Image 1 (cartoon, rainbow, N blue to C red):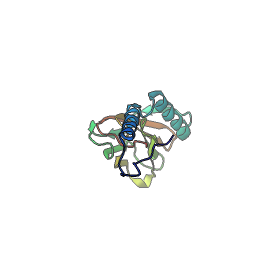
Image 2: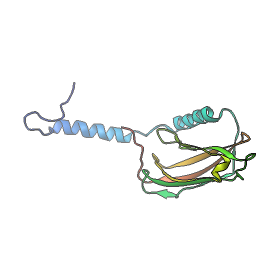
Image 3: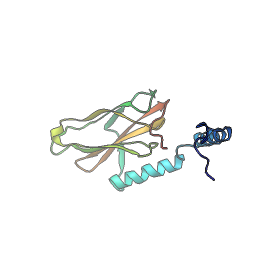
Amino acid sequence: MSIPATNSKTGHLSRRQLLVMSASGAALSALPFRAHAQEENDLKTLKKELFGDREIKKGKVSVTMPPISENGNSVPFEFEVESPMIDDDHVTRAVILSPINPEPLIADYGFTPASGKAAVATRIRLAGSQNVEVIAEMSDGTLWMGSEQTLVTLAACVIG
């Protein structure tokens, strides 16, 4: 059974239509974005796709983000990777990952020694409070990670 959007005679919603729509909206708002276990599995799967089974070590990557973000639509975000950025020792790639966003890969940056510095300052969208990670791949194949936590009071990236 389909409920018409408006009453064809008056062009207004009936009380019944309004109640059905209100109940539907309340039920949808009570649902979580995604289960936490699913988020972790999505992130693990993405890391495996991007980097295989290589070990990801903590360090060399510093991440800066405000501890509280009033609006998830535009969160200031910076990272820098410690590296001399010379031919034999440089960052080749850095990715920003979000465990909660509908698409966990926020950005994928490529670097060369000509970059001079492996650093980025930007703004990102966040679907809610979370720990955002940056993984840097070095020219020798090693992987390094840094992360930062932020509390988002108004989430972005809402599906639907």
